[in-house]
Amino acid sequence: MSSLIEPLNVAIAEGLVSKLNGKYHFCHDLIQDSVYSMIEEQDCCIHHNNYDIPSSTPREDARWLILQTQSMLSDISDETLLSYRVMTDYRKVMAMKFLAKLEHSIQQVQPALQPFVTTQIVKLTIDHGLSPVSAIGFAYFGGMVAELGDIRGGYRFTRLAKALVDKIQNCEIAGEVIWLSTESLSFIEPLRTVNEYRIQGQATSMAAGDIHWACWNKTSYCVALLWCGVKLSAVKEAFICNRRFIEEHNHLTTLYYLKIVERTVITFIGGESRIISDEELTRIVKENKNPYQLSIVYFQKMLLSLVFNDYHELKKSSEKFMKVRVPSWVLLSIHAGHFFIASLASFRIYRETRDTSWAKKGKQYKERIVSWNEQGSSWNFEHRSFLLEAEESYSEGKLYDAKMSYDKAISSASQHKFVQEEALSCELAAVFYLDQGEKSMALQYLKCAQQRFLEWGAFAIVRTL
Image (cartoon, rainbow, N blue to C red; front, side, top):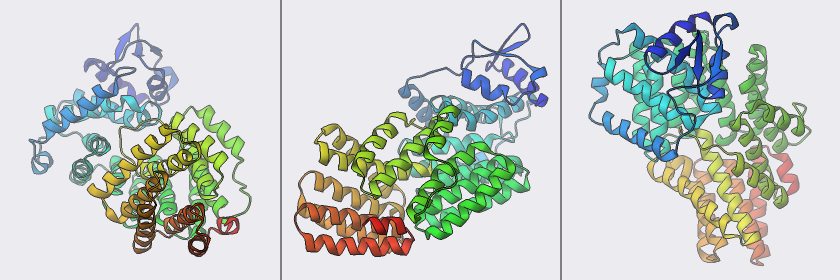
């Protein structure tokens, strides 16, 4: 849009963009493309050259920048920030709008650079006052603090972001802030409770005419239903409804995310997917050059092969997932599922191959789940911690510890209403007992797995068991 030319010119004054012979210059093609797509062709010509945000950076430098910013904010109370002076410098306000536009697109295509955008928004706010988009910077910053291991500290900033939206009454960014704060809250409160906030996010976005964040909130809601243990028939209907909504508004990014996971839902229930073939979906995602979408394709394959006990596919898809997975600076709810399933897969592959690198990966992924259980929501993570302890003990030959942990995982999953992971725990326990030659015990756990998968509506899994 031509209205973005003014903030681009202000960004030049702020040292964020350079301009030569009437052309705007950026150092990274992906940033260049994302900004170019927002500006009418006749209004600008963007070429590859210099940009204040680096094209690449050591992860440790970005980590230091986040921690430094957190330290600066530790001396400022939430009450002070909520009553902070308003940014009056029009040039700074427009520069903030430009940076806020970059946040989500840069997270998708070049996440390594996001800390530099986010901390710049926070710093401009502290130095010059609150702008209409300051809340976006604090929301993303909270996700970054949480990703570094401080779940509660991160939620402080996402909660602050929501309060800022309420104060400033900027409906245009409310959907994005609600989506981000809900992602952080997924690690602190029961998953089913948190998921309802995404409905509010969609409604708020639609009221503001923000189709982009309406689609993201609705898609995240559907994906979370799968992990909440909601009956698969209801999950399938929610996906169908959401797909129609997204197709109506032609929001292709969320459409491909949705189709990837919808195929998994249909596979669990049983029957052929008429959405899109596996080969076609993989081809489209690769052509999009979106690393997040590609990692989700391989993650879903890893999940299916684990549940259906297809070791060959499990090893292949696990290798591809771990190869293409792009480390994110913002902690998202999908990461919980990624680390959980990747840890289970790694321990299984280690038992088959005795390659210690897989045992190491299993432990690393497990540590994240355990830390979220200790710092965040035991409702969401206790049963997962127990199951990973069982699989680790099984892999190390600690048979008594494995038996105890499998039972704890099953009991905890049942108590917290995660029927699908209660079923998975029973299935893996049956594999364990069968490997020990205890066929009667294996049969008991296998029957329990069948009952729980049947209760969930995963008829295809029941048939394979």
